Image (tube, rainbow, N blue to C red; front, top):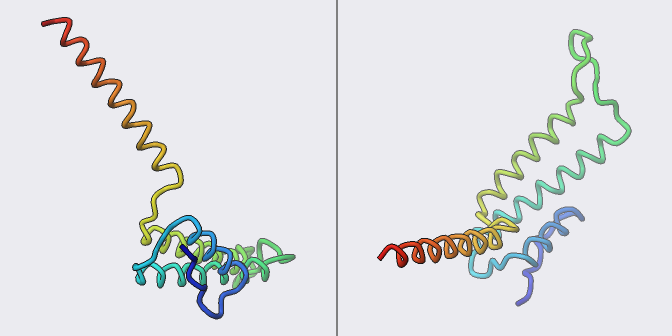
Length: 124
């Protein structure tokens, strides 16, 4: 099982995300998911660029009426992070601990069923 080559033009953040996701989740035969992942990686690169542009900048700037307003890059970073989260949800990847939680719930359910069966056996 090899990881598909990342799309051309990705920066370091996008490449790292591509490798991270495809190391953990198998998407062979799902080109639509790979296309979404490529978009997510581009957004990750954009966020990294915006954060680099924000380095050393003040958190607020003067607005049109000379009032302090949040720096426009901060708002754009927030929007890009929300966009990235939406795209990630569209991949419908299982949560990291989802399998463990399902196993725990199943074991708890089986213990409860066993206990209930034992109580009913005593009543009969």
